[in-house]
Length: 355
Image (cartoon, rainbow, N blue to C red; front, side, top):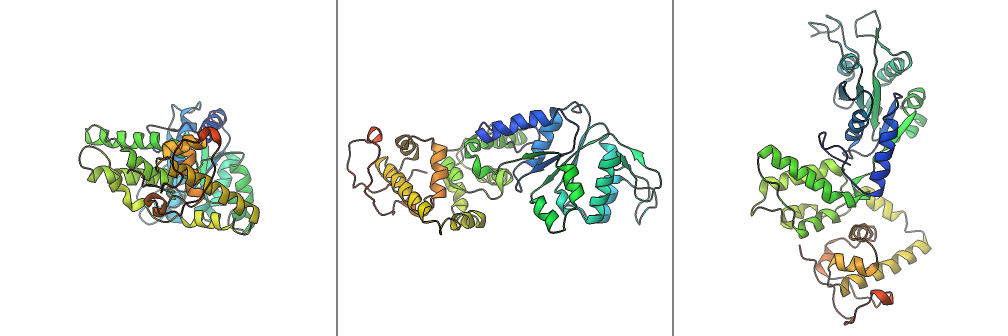
């Protein structure tokens, strides 16, 4: 999924192709849309893609984050206000609903709305009218509402923290944006798009990533998703020397998995069968890496999987840390499938991956 408003959706992984198809379908409707996904995953990019494929594409796309403003200011920003409606309201303002007339209003992180504002948003969705703060007359609006959230809204509904009727109204159509760690195939294209944008801003040629640098990026869990990738690449481009981005610029990423990943892995510990299968898979992967002299691309070919699938497997099995890269894993005798074996000593140590 793209990170950039200009670039739009970036990615050819299966999950992104499926999302692209759903975007195309929901764009043909004017019904409210709920976009779900982790922080930084590209929810606004998806919303813009829907708008750009809809009949409203020639009209405004307006966005506002419910987490960015206090309740009183958010209400006035969304619905508008009359002159003198509150301290500092020296003149009337039309609000974002009216500013987005004929187009799309993107309400980011809708779960951060107060109960009172949730009720007012529901009223607009039901009636198609807004009432400015301090005003008595309702104003008709023609706007498609696209909301986003990083939360599990059904759970918030059960906990009494989000209105059930508003959830049902918003979730008529839903899209889910996958986290970056689940679509690493797209990372090279995303990185290229980001570096190209950085180069355009500076009036320079885009900096290429070395093979080692790409290895580091692909080995990281990206808890901050595409937004974190953009920040990391922008920082690296600022300090790069020699006309390319070396692996040394990304050493800060060589740290332990995120708490969410650690919790997910810990959840498997009590399942004996899965433990045994994981250990067997681990031994196969280590054997393939040793016989490929630590070269992940060659090891992936030996295992009959793609390079990106190997990176996901390494992280899932806990083999993507510094110990694996340094080649200190103990040897394990494993017989690889016959067609993938190559003559050579099985006693070779796992060598460091060139970065």
